[in-house]
Length: 261
Image (tube, rainbow, N blue to C red):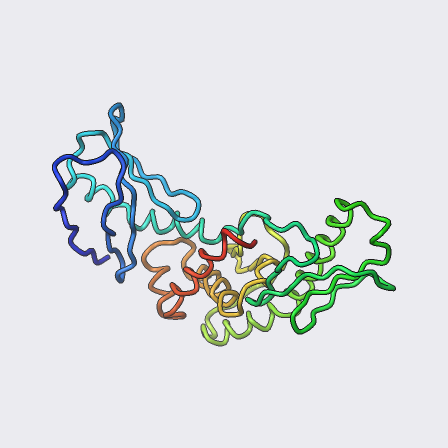
C-alpha cells in the first residue's frame, strides 16, 4: 500500500470537530474523515457511517501524528466498511402516484396510472404506463400498494431478462477462469449483490433501475469475489485490472443512493 505524506500543519487551538485533508491509500484512493475530540474518551475509534462518511473519535489531547498513524494503519478496513455502505440500496422514497419519476436502466420515466381492460405495466418512449382494471374502486392507499407491487414485479421481470446478458458480457471480459455456479435475481433490502463461496451470485432486481455500466460494475465486483472473498488490497488490484474505471461507477452508485432505491 502506498501512502502519501499527511500535512501535519494544523493550528494550535483545534476545534472539537473538523475535517482533515484526505489520507491517500492504495493507488491514490482518498479517505477523508471528520476528527472529533472528546474529553472523556480514553481510546481512539473509527466509525464509518451510512453514505461512506468516516468519523475518527479521539481523546481531547491526542497528538495529530498518533491520529494519522492510527488512521493509516486501518485504511484497508475503512475502505472495506465504506464499500459495504456503497452497496446498500436506498430507502424507499416513492409514493407511486401519477407524475412521479421512476428510473429504468439509468433513465427517468414519468409514472402514469390509467384504467384499462387488464392489469399491466408497459414502457413507452417517456413513460412507465401502469394499467389497473378498477382503479376507481380502490382507495388511494390501496391503489398505491397495487401500483407498487405491479411496478416491482415489472422491474424483476426486466431484470430477469437483462441480467444474464450483462453477466455474460462481464464473464467474457474477465476470462475463462471465472466460473459462476448460478445467478439469482430477487429484491434485497440490504445489498445490491452478493457472491457465495461456491460461486453463486445474487443480484438485486431493483438494480435494473440503474445504467448498464453501473449494473456491470456490481456484477464485476461480485466476480472479483470469486478470487478474493474480502475487500483487501488484492481485491482492489483485481478490480483495477478487470474494470479500470470502476471508481467512477462506484461514485455514481453512491450519488444515486439518497434519491432512489
